Length: 403
Image (tube, rainbow, N blue to C red; front, side, top):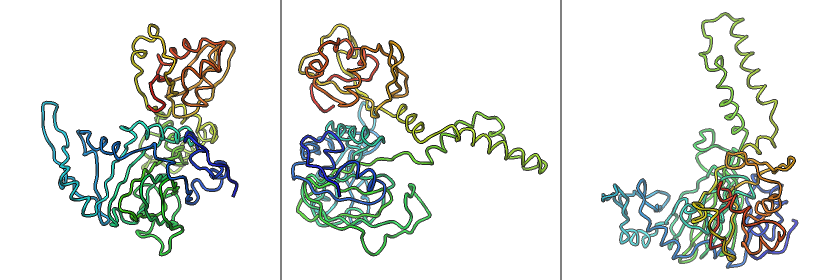
């Protein structure tokens, strides 16, 4: 297996997978089979601490509690540890932390879903996945203190990357009889094979990749464990077909009821028209063109950059500020005469060609200290270019490398 030396800061797929070569992973592993990569004990320590987990579970939410609990293969009822309370701002979920402590003591596993929405280091971690793998990413956090299973042996439709932060968990991964199943897929067995495809311990710093649809389970080995699972949903052939269906819905004949009572020749003509409508849309597409279109419309983890978001021309950018490129996918930049154009966050942008080196730099690195960005382009009006990018939501200015 081709390998590379382990990198230092975890800023890229190469850093994440070290010592495995990313090209090998994408060609031979991703979407095909699981892979366990041992790592240095502190490899993922920057992602989350116990204090960060405590803060995340203390946030009041309107629609659902900030945490879930699972034990012996079942999700525990929310009423066991939380309740709805009403104040001047409406209804909120209130957590009974005494009951949570008791349930954890009895062997429950604590789960915080989509923690990348509230914890900046995990949001930054997901941005790396989105830029490198071209799919929206989300991060769930799991903590347990007893050798009691939280979840049964199960499968998830998304591609999963498990990073072990604290403690040791024993994992089993089983090959499915039906590859690439969809969520709530009915055309597969209700139980995994008898023998696991891979089985082993996950220690701090270890990474485990699990393809979508593969059965898996985990059991705490040490007294306390904490891991982060990032999930991604890559585009599929169904993504393409759903887009085509949306496009041909503009055809009034396609929207019309099937000609149940028409003559056979009229029915044949209808099917011919339907095939032609789909074929016309499909024939003009390539995998590259589909992915470029999806990337151009991909969601962005937006954020304000006050005060520049309000008055971009009146505030100087501090020398120690960090500049963050916000679009999650790498756009294709085209140079046309004195302008450059590209599509991102569902918008087509045009800028003066003088800004091309700075924009390409930001797209490539995703984030950079303002001072270093200026030093790499000493002949360019870097600050003016950045303020223009901030005003349209492509760039954020922050005090920290994580936003």
